[in-house]
Length: 350
Ligand SMILES: [Cu+2]
Image (spheres, rainbow, N blue to C red):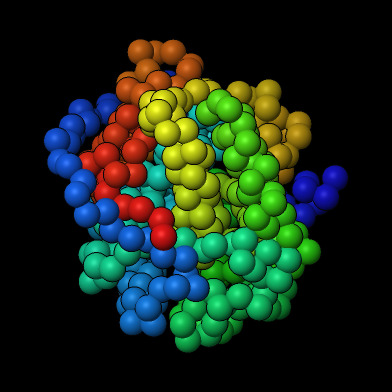
């Protein structure tokens, strides 16, 4: 199958029962009167583009801060990637996929602020570049992320992320490797507007979730093959956050399509992967995937949150589910991230 050939995925043992005490969430009472505007990268000011890229580079070259540290993390950037790694089996092919990645973008935004960037996050309106990703301004060498990688490892060799090292991944390993990607224009065709429209047609959260996940989200990953196309640690490439803001926008567009507000409270799915399914895009379930990619190490399991945190011990995701960031920002509930203009979050896509 095209998908399984082109995209490398892994999964390992289930993380149920890992020792972890969830902190109580910070309940916010803030209101959102002037939401920050998140532009497509195409429309971002050149000043903000350069400052945004510089802050990403700063995180990639700053030492890790968390105590106790996250497994394998040597830089502040590694901490962000490690967080994705330790949550990998809870936030893909589960109901948590959309809310956790929305929260993950907030964590990322806070880290950029540590490095002096106070502008908005940007998304990549991939519909504008569908079928011809490689000619997108996103890959500019001075006002973008640099282009497709080169050599056997597909290391990015131009732009702000050339010659930088990420220490998390591949999969559940922690090994130094370059920021790498490989652009395949043909696969990017399915990030086009007709595919996005199709993905947003579902009338329930779970239908929209599945269609976004296995549609433009997955094809974007396949077309970019960030960090070897590894779904556990693809956030090692800063480009990940532009793609996932696009994914977040798709969810928001679906939520906003219903004007009754019903979709601001609608959630569903599991809070952790079903081992028999694993990553849905890589058929065979967790055991097959782990034969190729290994399983979470003891250190990763020890750092992994209880997947049922806030869900009353059940397997189904609820609005009360508590999401955590390893201490980078306060925990948040799924309920808090449902509305991007709800107070805890305050932004809009333009
Ligand atoms: Cu992810």
